[in-house]
Length: 322
Image 1 (cartoon, helix red, strand yellow):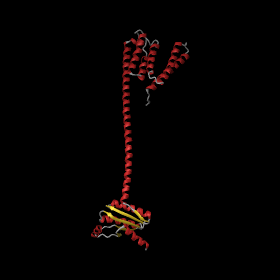
Image 2 (cartoon, one colour):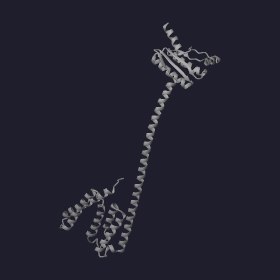
Image 3 (spheres, helix red, strand yellow):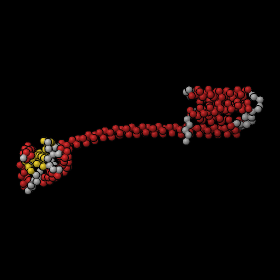
Image 4 (cartoon, one colour):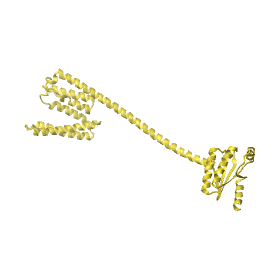
């Protein structure tokens, strides 16, 4: 579908008038009949005037639209010759109205048509074709239809403009919401990244491992030990023991809040995994209460136990020296 603006229509009509004027001059010279200077002058005037009006319109003079309608109306009324003044009604009677439908408001459609009709009636002294009742009836019906069509078109254009404005407003709203969602998503991603860092820090603090000698790793266990924490502790100790080529890992459980068979099983699994890497595992910090509980549960620890990490380090140093 080709979209034509009112501005393009005005320029096209003025250009068409200029071309018609030039062609009329050329035909006048090539027709073989005696050249009538009055006709040639009027045709040249139409061409030059159209070009001048188009120049002014392109310069921003919007009133040229109305000037075109007035000029066409006057030209059609004053330059029309017989038999189209008194003998036969000309279709040119509706040319100004058609132009007004394109270029101006409904009042100009009505005004240009009635003005042209009055000019022709005056020239025919209110007799002839344009004074015929049937012709006047046809004129009224046609003009009414043109006005109705023009009003419908303008209403449709207005509704389309309003719809476009609403669509643009909705588009702007959606773009604004999308921008807000994007900013919120970016903020959320930043918060998630911070939370991940905090979780990693908490996990690191929950499963610390400190190198206290070239090949000795101390892992103090504090608080409650569950499956998740035991897995994290195991992964951390295995990675560090492998990277540092440790030969001894001291599990200090002095800070463990509660000890039962499940916790012992988890710790023993960690010890077994470390032994597979070639590390000796010593458990330190067993309190009297934990010792009594383990005795009551008839649980034996398959690893060496000492009272403190220092004692474990001394014992390991003595073995290494021997």
